[in-house]
Image 1 (cartoon, rainbow over the protein chains, first blue to last red):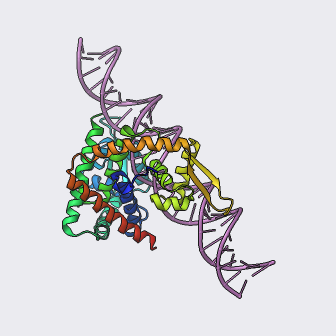
Image 2: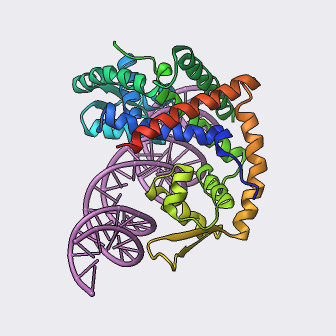
Image 3: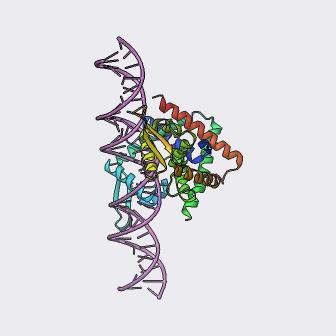
Length: 147
Length: 147
DNA sequence: GCTGATTGCTCCGTGTACTGATGGTTTCCT
DNA sequence: AGGAAACCATCAGTACACGGAGCAATCAGC
């Protein structure tokens, strides 16, 4: 009776957007390397030798999830995980040469994929969409962090 | 070196948006009932006695995921899952009285949560965001379905 | 320098999400 | 009627995502 129109619910739309993206990624970018894994490689390319917690903040991954994702990348030899000799709690992370190679190859493909993904929108709409999502996400993340 | 700015990548932003939403949901709406579970209850409120496949199309959930989500709702007694006597392949689904009660209570809370979630945007921006996400998601879902 | 608090990581349990394989039903076509 | 095709559901395997508990290392205050 009192059913709601889910298309007016940002959460439902966000989930659909993310699902559709994941699927498109696996066909247009890579089957082996997922989008979060790419985000990790990308962050380590920019800032090598950081620990998991810092990396997690960088790419917005939970501490447990970072551990999982990094473990998979390490298993494939794309990332090195070394205990910090100066602080025995930390794992210092770094992309291997192979990891850097994979990252370089995927950068080009992600750009192609983003064009396909955003194809229904014109240039102004794309810019608007990214900006609005960024603002909402950032505000919600701040609420979380202040808890 | 050649690191990319992830904030220009819709996929990364979509993931952040969805994560932030999930977290906000668990604090403002319900700890027990997740957003996909609510979507299922909502769909069954509007259209009772459909099977899992149809339900999945309605709320955009994979056949396996529908089975999981419905199983959890059934375990909590919010949904009934009966083998269709007319077509032995189908599970006919229906929200129980308790499921309807939970749905009613959550409808009000989701509206409150959506206001908080979209608080950083003005009325026009909200409308724009929902419309643009909807268009991108729909286009990407069509690509998937045509495969 | 000791002690208590903090920090970084791991492990466990739960939920969402997808693919591929399998099996049981129904339907359709000859 | 009988067999092939289509269809629905389930199961196994993998990946992301989170919180809580626990452990080892470090730090801060005295």
